[in-house]
Length: 277
Ligand code: ADP
Image: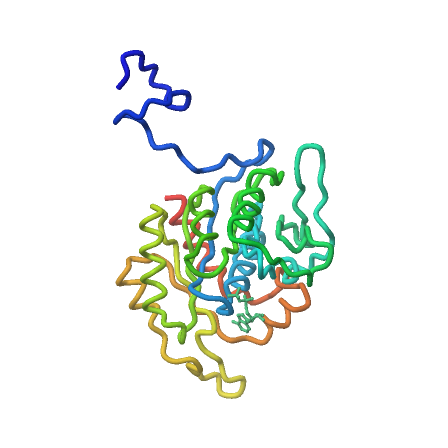
């Protein structure tokens, strides 16, 4: 420690042992007040991460919470389409305004900034990470009780930056029965531990198909193993979402928030309870 130590590490260049590690967490926009941030992650694409994220947000909104979705899947954004949002985000002198869905969910996604939703985003990782960080720092989110982040799949550069730059309160893992679940969950648990973020729950999507004639549950992609995995890793909430053509239908026509049968409503109640303990 220097003789003239003022204990203000932010303005000191001395490399002493008592120097506090600089937090990489960014401050949100000054007009944002975001109470809880939940990241929705998966090991790979196509398992229903965006579907799960949308259903969670729809459910939180239906429960009366101020809800937002940040679509951090910059190269494969699908959130605006699921919520039927076609307009572009508007800016003001202060920052960027989120687009609001018909049901009142605040959304920010690369797709609401692009000229056309089918324009590809061919960017390097650092630029993508910077954009996600700006979704946090430059978007005027206002009051938000729960923000759900649709993370890019995997454990690469972008998810890592998001975990380091945003104050994530917990993660929800999405898998499917055939998705080498054990390995994926193991990786997610290790990443969460490294980042010091709790795992709030695990969703097994496309878990089964219910026969419309006899009601029997068919394990199309193999037997479920999430209960055992949740127990092994002390994950407090588990949900199993069936293959349901209504989900695809509602998502494809932008009506996901008006789905009657939201399979994640009870799961979300449990997650919220644990988060606020
Ligand atoms: P990811 O975000 O993991 O890439 P998506 O959420 O975009 O995956 O889902 C991939 C496709 O599968 C989408 O067309 C979606 O509508 C469909 N889908 C996801 N979950 C289900 C489900 N439980 N039942 C039927 N279709 C589903």
